Image (tube, rainbow, N blue to C red; front, side, top):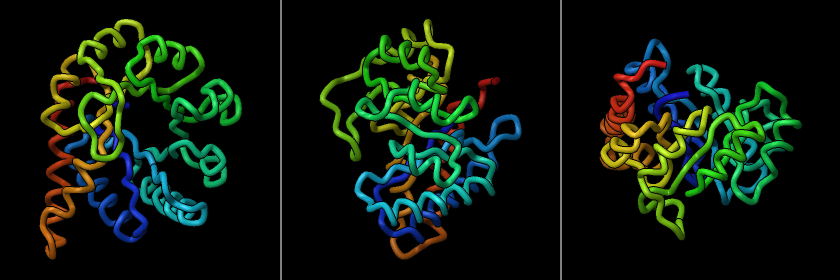
Length: 228
């Protein structure tokens, strides 16, 4: 798992969500590292959706990801991941434990864990069976407010003791993610930098798609020299 970790926004418009996600997935297929899509994972995250909308969107996104060869995981809702056969889940600090979800979903599931600004928490998640650990937020985010600041040095500290991939989160752009990737981050989680790019050319879908592609390519370029 290396590259852009695409996380969906809180959009109720399923057609729009699918259209922009497909633009991103198609863009990721072109500059992919070693023949892979440069989008390493897609996480379906919609904090405000009702269960029926969440089911419909997650099912459609999973099918889209399957067509593009990108794993699709679900934020928080383990029951939903099980119901649709998603590739795994991402767990926050107040969700079920990593160990319990690993026992529930089995060894093949991708299980991510939010570790905030704590290397100790990342080590514990890894030891409990996490497939990757997410650290941050590093920068101000339009989506999620953090009541702490994560120092860049934590990436190197984590890399010294963590064997699973390390994801960086929080207000990520290709520019501000670059020094953290240089410190050893394996994936960059992004929402706004990709999805908002579709709205930068009002009334011009073709330009919106081009802007999404440019954002994806810029993230991919951060890992262009990496082997793995």
